[in-house]
Length: 160
Image (cartoon, rainbow, N blue to C red):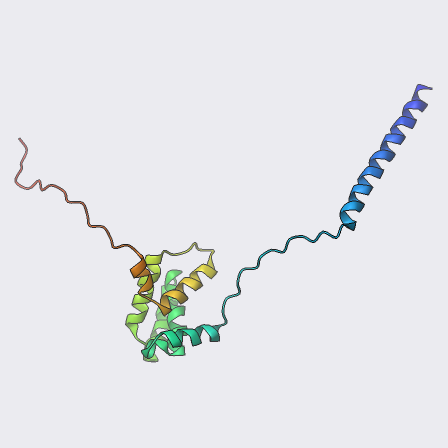
């Protein structure tokens, strides 16, 4: 007889647990609560829009669309240490009559600004684009290198 009372109690408890869990699930599903929208990162500009903007800001051969595209591509490849491919693109860059000094200034700007991590390709692309349009911006923003501390000369002191 003790078993029949316990069996009824266990059955009642199981039914209560099932009823409580199903009502909680029903309450969650029936709510009109919308999950908060995740903020999307701004979409990068199209290649045509970027080239048009760079052409407005720059002057001379560095503002030509082919120079912008090939120059930024070569700088990106140099940042990724793919020098063989970068040099092939720089040969094309030179063939179009693009200024080699602009690649040098842009690459220097990128190095002074600091390279993003290897998996951050969007950050690298943005840095290359910004340094191409304003290659002297990072040089102006970066503090000048501090001079080496003067060390006392030991010449002629000799060991005593």
